[in-house]
Image (tube, rainbow over all chains, first blue to last red; front, side, top):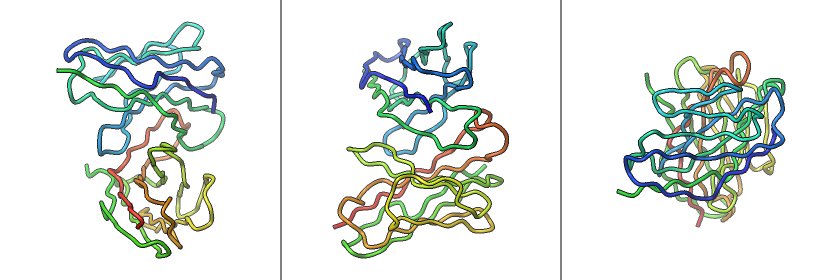
Amino acid sequence: DAKTTQPNSMESNEEEPVHLPCNHSTISGTDYIHWYRQLPSQGPEYVIHGLTSNVNNRMASLAIAEDRKSSTLILHRATLRDAAVYYCILRDVDSGNTPLVFGKGTRLSVIA
Amino acid sequence: KAGVTQTPRYLIKTRGQQVTLSCSPISGHRSVSWYQQTPGQGLQFLFEYFSETQRNKGNFPGRFSGRQFSNSRSEMNVSTLELGDSALYLCASSPRQGPPHTYGYTFGSGTRLTVV
C-alpha cells in the first residue's frame, strides 16, 4: 500500500469545523482512501472512505483533491467526543485482501 | 447487533509465561485480524484468519500464533512472554467478501496485556 503523511497533532474548538489533512502523493489509480479513528481506550473505528469523488456520511465528509494526491477529512462540528487519533489509510483494490496498515495518525484535541 | 468481543480486558503475566487471548467477531463475519498496539510502534498487524486458515501474517516472531474455530471465534497465543510484549492487543472482524474497498473492519476494545 502507498504511504500517507499526516500531521502529528491538531487542535480544534468545540462546535467548530475541523479539517484533517492527509498527503498521499504516490497514490495509485486503484487506491481507495480510508479513514479510521481511535477514541481513548477503544479500538479503531471506521469513519469514511472514497476513491475520487467527495463523500459524505453521518460522521464526516471526505474531500479528495482532483489529482488525488491529498485528501481532507472534515468534521463539520467538532464535539468533545471527537477527540481521537485519526488514521488515513490507502487500500489498493488490486492487491487482494491485504490487512489495514496504520501509520501514526493525527491526534485531534477538542477544546471546550 | 453485538460488536466484537475480546476477553479478557486486562491481563498481567510474568515473563516466561504464555497467554491466550480470545476474540468473538460480529455474527456473520468470517475474518478476524489481530493487531498489537504499543506507544512506540503504534498499531502493527499480527495475522489474519479467514475460514479457519491464516491468510496474512505480519512480521512477528513465531512466539505469536493464532487459530480460528469453525464458528469464526479466534484465539491468539503468545509463548515465552517478554517484557516488550506488554501492549494492547486488538482484534478486528470483517466480512471479507468482495473487493477490499467495499468492506470495513470493526475492532474490539482490546486486551491490555502487562508482562512483569
